[in-house]
Amino acid sequence: MARFVALAALLAVLGACAPFLSNGQDSPFDRNQEPDLVQLEILNNHFSDARVSVLWEGATENLGVVSGKSKQVFELPRRSHQVRVRVSLLAASRFTTEPLSTQRDARLYLVIPSNL
Picture 1 (tube, one colour):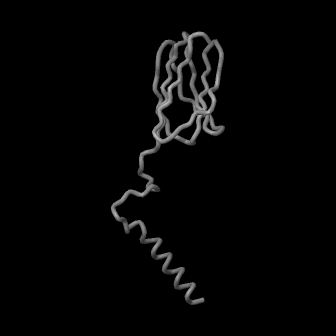
Picture 2 (cartoon, one colour):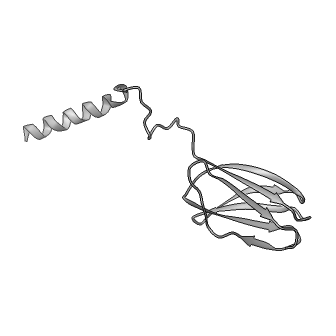
Picture 3 (cartoon, helix red, strand yellow):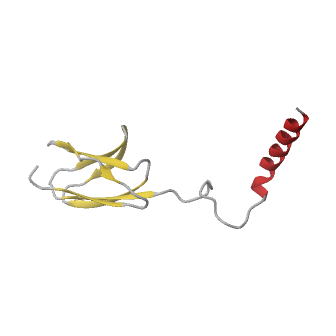
């Protein structure tokens, strides 16, 4: 029993000192790391404005509006390995893409055709 208490105390002390025992290498668990970003470039060839949102495993994040006949780039933190893009054209139709793979620092392109 005394050995168990001594071992538990030693592990507690080592755990408390661990942040001060850095070897100069970056930890993959460091909270100060830059997040994985996904760039989503939307080219809207339609005349109507397009409201754009992304779906990360069921959670919806509204990105904004891309004006008709323009393009816009959105940067967002990667929340999952797949994302779906939902586009709602004002006074027109709406569509959602199939799941798109998002790897570290991915760049995705989406073209909204003029004939929707």
